[in-house]
Image 1 (tube, rainbow, N blue to C red):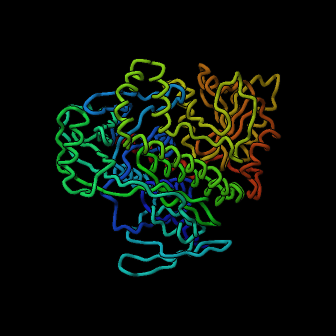
Image 2 (cartoon, one colour):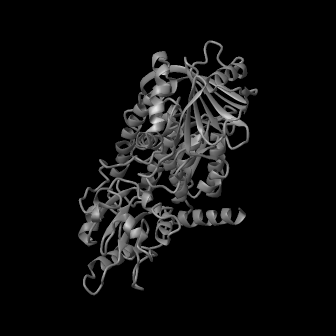
Image 3 (cartoon, rainbow, N blue to C red):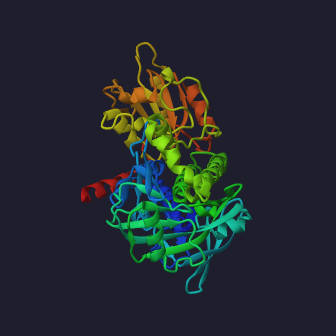
Length: 569
């Protein structure tokens, strides 16, 4: 019988969010159709910052190194006002360990190019000039009306539709989801060469006395992203002269801005949808929320929510979990979007800083900040740490099983990033092995082997789980001593177990996006069954007896791709 040619998921939009969704769905073995209304890839870039949590996500996808070599690492934020340097704030992630303690400054067009290559490696072609015009869904599928650039039309059927089609999303409008919020001031973005003595190792905030500007250094020598919070009625006209005048005034030293390669004048908005899916149709990225670029969160948030959606959709489509898992997409991501609007509203106010009286007080305020190290460190953690995305968690998610059993109070709590443990001691065998494990497409059950002679139950439970659920669950034994232990994970110096707060017999259940779903002191069948109940894992699988313990083909393909890329470097 011939294979079903119908795509399991149709993704509308081949920007960074749609590419992430398509990549993660294909990596898990689903048939994906990816369309975009544009004639081809964008040549301009709205987003330029990839923050630490997004870098962790790209690491899980296997593409972070390809991105990092295209960008510039940034670890500082420097403030000038009326010709004086006020303060330089260094990135401080001491309370949020990560393997990527910096922001990568890179054009969105370069980020998209990396993701396009990764998607192509997984066999997904982008269909340019194909626009979603309308759709209708029933209990089994979604019918999508598509229009090609030549005017031709097609009706495509898929099991699911994911709208990553931007701020004017047809998918969102067809679903009847309102964008709730407000429009704000007009700003201007420009990419231009700048002759300046400023070291390109920081983002710069520059206040002229009446308004603020920002400068962000690209990896390409002498090229900067410029932001003007008050471009005036002239808009992009004579941008070169006005940027030169304003920046020279604010910095107190002459700069020369060359002819911009690209400018965009826009009225930014602060809006989001009240929910992010209806039946078999979902929205992500700018299709679900639009906001100020002040803190550089838009693309980062979209990539993370596309990853959140993709693993859940794949688990349901492949029969590993029940449909209730999909409800957690809105449950988890709408609060993140709501918090994002609040934080970007604050960042927007601080970036603009139009109050002249407050501006006059800036030198006094930041003289105190500069000369009081504890205060400076607190602001560094608050400002730069807040933009990182590392504090995002799912503590209140229905997928999170609360507990009070963290050993000695260490290790991640349910709902929090497990990546922090992978960063505990760079170069140590255990944390590095965990970082590799988090690239698996499956859920992960980590178990610390104990003394089998005294208590064989945890080891037997882990072995049964590995045999029964291997299609969607990777079972790893941390610090394994027994040859029969499933999936040995090296930890010769206990660095990983200490970072995880994991003692003998203890266990952790990690979601495919690297967040902790549950943990316990002693692994038993009953404990594990309770942890798997919330996501409905295994509920649609006809029979678990004799199930393969091998990972899905998608993991083999992506690891093979990573190996090829490493060999080419």
